Image (cartoon, rainbow over all chains, first blue to last red; front, top):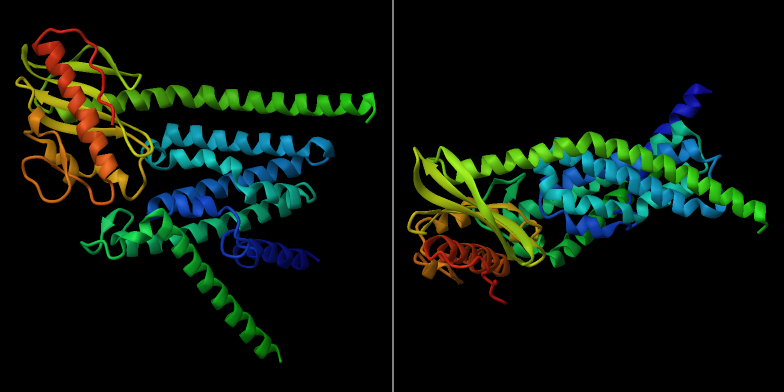
Length: 209
Length: 197
């Protein structure tokens, strides 16, 4: 019984990373995936902030789910989300001011993330605390993974550097760090992600036959 | 919807919003003194960096540019005035760029520093890079203009971020230096209007 629920939790966790990856599979929250990913550092910190907010929102909503009146659930979800985002903002400004100076502008945007509201509505408001946390972790890590991959690719190819350290002294493909290049980068990586996924799935089917 | 429903919903919202408000107030109370100290320390450090030789940077007064309040300072070493530091703002591509400019007694720029801005990450934020900021050393007010392409006399624009380069050079720094010359040197009134672009 316990091993059964463990595999369920594992599947739940992986669901957010692979099967329902916010950016590569669901194509949600594409705004930040383009706006902040032109350098690796911003991408990673944005991903971490989203991971934190996602887990805390899922936890809070799941704890309150029996108390929330269904008719006003959306304003309550929004309050919980914006509350946690504000907490993240204040904490970052207090404890990591230099990072906050870089990504602070985009942290406030997390309030409007479709992916976070969607998880609150579809999952946390219907499930108990532990699965909700695991679901939040999975979705958050999936988002962090996607932002890391995209920003790694864009900074390396667009700017010739990584984490601010110069690797090649030219800008190989400047367009990749411009907003338009963000669409290209996300499109290319999304295709790659899905291609690998399909191949992997096909192999899995072969093996089981 | 009966009156009872309306009452229940209202109560539900009020309770949750109150709790949320209290939690936020608590976090804000914890974080804001620290944020305030961070900003203060950042300013002190910024002044020290701009005028490494000075042993005191005293506030002279305040002025405003783009409807923002900014401060200016006098730098002294052993009682002698060695220069001035002025805070200034430039209207950039997507934000107001908060800069500090250090000039010597003759109002030649010694150093500039970009304190905060929200220009495009990866392009506009190159205004923070030493390769851009170092160009300002030794520039008099006549040479505070942006040139696209190679230049030694003036300021070379960052490729892909001409608007941000202009905002720093021709808006923030130039107006700041002009203000200092007008107020400190010529003793004029403190109301320089920033040029419109």
